[in-house]
Amino acid sequence: MTTLPGNRGKAGAVQAGMIQALQHFSSGYFGYFDADLSTPLEESARLRSCLEEKPTLEFAFGSRVAILGARIERKLYRHFIGRVIATFISNILHLMVYDTQCGAKLFTRELAVKVFEKPFITRWLFDVEIFGRIIGMYGRKRIEEVVVEVPVKSWIDKGGSKVNWTYGFRVFYDLLRIRIHYHSFL
Image (cartoon, rainbow, N blue to C red; front, side):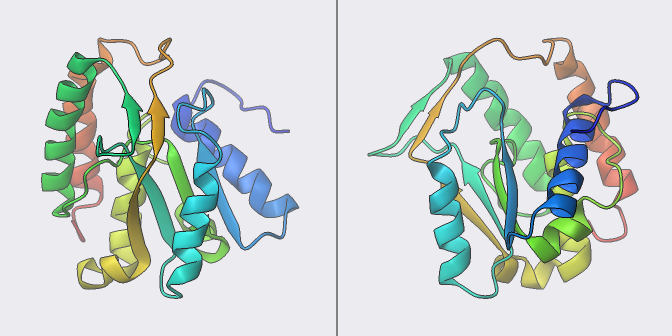
């Protein structure tokens, strides 16, 4: 177990956990899920199946798309706010991605080592930075060869988010920081 020297937000905690896992386990796949398990762990098997079906894929991530057969439960205002932010994220990344912020991500070992080797510049929007790093590694033309978005069958908002509502004002500032930091390939 790693003890962080101070609060580095979710980004720091996930990075530390991924580095520890990569150092201590020999699996071919590494990932993370939100601690509240709003996305059930069973979805990890679906993400892994997607990676195994197509050999060029290196990153599978969950997406909260309310389609027939899926159980996506969240407050209406959170859905609308999320869609607005997701639109900004897609424009910054120049990538038609529906949901970068779903807390269900799975990487091949090789990609995880590269993505998590350096600290993230934001505390909460590190998921967007992950996409920026992958675009930087593979280029925009190859992104669909290595990344797949997988609609989850279940996602239930558990409430009690640690993100304060005032962070909504900071989101756009952090997105600007990401755009500037990763500007050479975004």
